[in-house]
Length: 115
Length: 115
Image 1 (cartoon, rainbow over the protein chains, first blue to last red):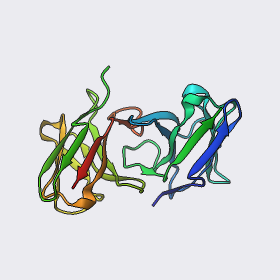
Image 2 (tube, one colour):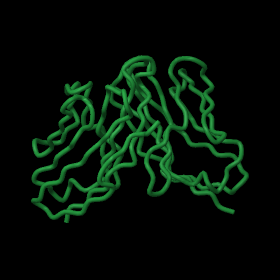
Image 3 (cartoon, rainbow over the protein chains, first blue to last red):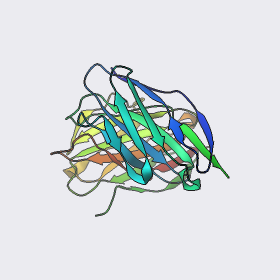
């Protein structure tokens, strides 16, 4: 079985400051991990994914995440927040890399960006 | 290339009525998934089709929900009769059958409100 814990339900940052959204996972296998973003009234967009290759993964819009097996973490970061980053972010685990199977979602972190 | 599309975008029905949601996956994607997010909760898996076959339907909440994928192309999810607790956002996703199997591409969702 797998699970995902997003440690913060809400994060607020000022524009131009770093973003850190925290995620811890649990999986019985070697998982694939994803971050998806949902802007208001929009669908889910893939930000980035880890699928057992490089542990530092770069995504769209300047986001990146680092897979740390020893800490079972996959935190999402961005050096400088932009107003357009305000959205809800989901950390997601797929149980076994290389297979097509259901995703398990975290509860989401709502990112607020202030001027 | 067209993404995953869902219809309708919104639906408001009364308790006891029937609603059918439709999902068109990305062309050529054999894997099709349904998820839903009930208000205030996390996004949860409902079921997974591989072509026209149900690979995993462990997330279907009860027998009021019926999913079909005749011909292995688009899929429908019917709720009959609808209950208040069925309100939420229903997402569809699809993924390839070769190569990158794990990456699921999501549609914009159908927002269902049962009154």
